[in-house]
Length: 404
Ligand SMILES: Cc1cc2nc3c(=O)[nH]c(=O)nc-3n(C[C@H](O)[C@H](O)[C@H](O)COP(=O)(O)OP(=O)(O)OC[C@H]3O[C@@H](n4cnc5c(N)ncnc54)[C@H](O)[C@@H]3O)c2cc1C
Image (cartoon, rainbow, N blue to C red; front, side, top):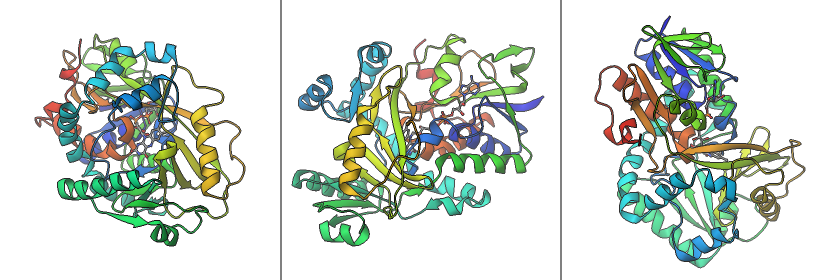
């Protein structure tokens, strides 16, 4: 029996296993899939040191009306999708009010600012340097009002959090990204963030590093996790301790242990497109609710949030994103026959869940990283590993805060 069994081989599970192994523990990972094939595969690939505030729900009356009427592309929903998570969505809205959001941002900002520092040594040790770029991403501003908002964000983030960024005018943007075909008023170059051209590949390399260092990965189902004597057992995996790092599937398992975990499941889609002259940086076109990331497979168009229990065959956010991308760039045919889809595991208070599961000896939780789990995995992994070694943990992240 290993000392610790980690359930889930996404970015969060694999970096948890690495952090525990680094501290001398004998660790096994179990996943029904290969490492990094679910949510950690499908994201926009940004390691976002600039994302110092978690995404709040837009609460201005105009924005809410847009969402309610199904206009705009930031948030789409349907009735079954909304009803199945109404309580969590309502709590998320409450926590998006300024005072609560400021409180969450204080913790979130501290986590986010450590992300490149934590990824750096793992990238080096796993030989993943060739899929990482360390020169930031670009956020487009198409109107004077958006440009002014961008200017304020640049100043505020620099003063409050030390985030490095540059405001670009149209000519500077053209010089940096000559493949953009149309005139854009300006942009922010978020310079100290990193990006990855193969997010699933990065998790796979971290997993290979874990194995090279003596760790074991089992292919199996974690859904039957149970206790037998002093051991936690799932399929062929056993450990004195177990860590639940199943991303959006975590609440389902914890429900079996009496812990009702409210989660907002923000579905996203992506698809790759052939492209001869891709941009040098990922381009965030928030006006069209997409991020366009140059990846190994082509230009990845990744969409914003959809509150639906089942994926749509023809997701409107992706069709709109494709149209917007074609206006900006010369892009070719889609690479895949079907778009990819997955769900961001978002907690109503916007903070990940990291710590001991109440009333369950040696059972630990590590999930709920929302829009930035690819960025934050190794940061909160270190916090959890320290707590499992007897440290106090971060009370703001503790599972104790979840309702029973
Ligand atoms: C469109 C989109 C864009 C995004 N862009 C970014 C970005 O640019 N930067 C960023 O930081 N974040 C981004 N995110 C968020 C980020 O991808 C997630 O927060 C993160 O991947 C969550 O990682 P995880 O390890 O918790 O979950 P996952 O990667 O989903 O891992 C969970 C694992 O659990 C396994 N599992 C589930 N159930 C079982 C079971 N019963 N038995 C065995 N195994 C099981 C799965 O196979 C999976 O491997 C984006 C998300 C989306 C959807």
